[in-house]
Image (cartoon, rainbow, N blue to C red; front, top):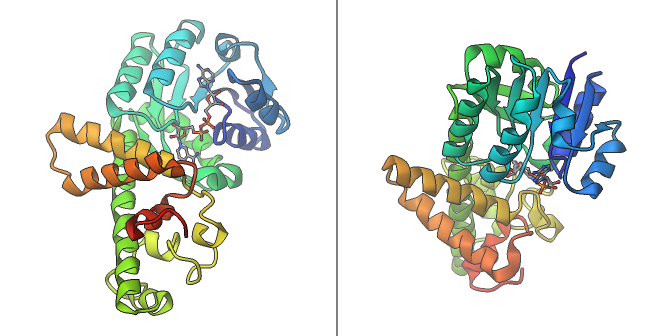
Amino acid sequence: MTSIAFIGLGNMGAPMAGNLVKAQHKVVAFDLAQASMDAAAELGVGLATSAQDAVKEAEIVVTMLPAGKHVLSVWADILPNVKPGTLLIDCSTIDVDSARKAHAMAAELSCLSLDAPVSGGVGGAKGATLTFMVGGSNDAFAKGEEILAQMGRRVVHCGPAGNGQVAKICNNMILGISMIGVCEAFVLAEKLGLSHEALYDVASTSSGQCWSLTTYCPVPGPVPTSPANNGYKAGFASALMLKDLKLSQEAAQAAGAATPLGAAAAQLYGLHNAWGEGAADFSGIIHLLRGRTEA
Ligand code: NAD
């Protein structure tokens, strides 16, 4: 049994903390929102009155927060209260710069640290089937791998500090671009009189095959479990796709990498969100590409 502090109990954090309780760890958690605290308490998670209080006895601290500024502020608050040698793991999706700053803050106080963003969404958080993309030292990874595995199905060490976030934004840039590509192909097929089923049957077994087509197919029918069959209810919200595409664009600019399709995808998801579709599944961008907002 490990003593774990968990800060940030939202849609992802609460079920992840619940899975650590199921794995027999002692979990003490904190969130600014009472509703999030209540949701976690129902899963057997112990509650603290502040983030500083939650981390006092912890051997491992996990944060699952909205953005880089929240992570840096929470880590600055808790680091003076943790024991030297404690491992801090940030599972939020944040910008690479903030992730590397957080690692440096931890190192200054002789703590180990990992950036470990996830893929797999709320379903993966509940079912403990997340993929963790992990950046940090070999020592930190050796200490954190087991508890990450208890919240997910795959734990991949991507290299030094920040590389988990790099892997995450690169993966999601592929995803955003490929979803738009798949949507454009369905819209073109519609205009030219090819049925959704016929395009799916060909592309899913040909060189156009990809996750956006075969798992999140943006038209109802060919993949019965895709969000398109459920009124485009997320799934993976368009607002989160936009967040990740913006992070990859910021990183690309800072690194001097040419990502013209990533930039176009960020613009299109910006429009989709501006149309009030941020809460809908990201595959709903097909409506925008058809030139109308309804299915
Ligand atoms: P969420 O908004 O549901 O939860 C965030 C929680 O953090 C909230 O409960 C909020 O009250 C809490 N919080 C904010 N500031 C805090 C502070 N200073 N101290 C304590 N608690 C604080 O978000 P989520 O969907 O759980 O996502 C969390 C992270 O995971 C984000 O970085 C997101 O990009 C990433 N992510 C989300 C998904 C998804 O499908 N939801 C998938 C992959 C990655």
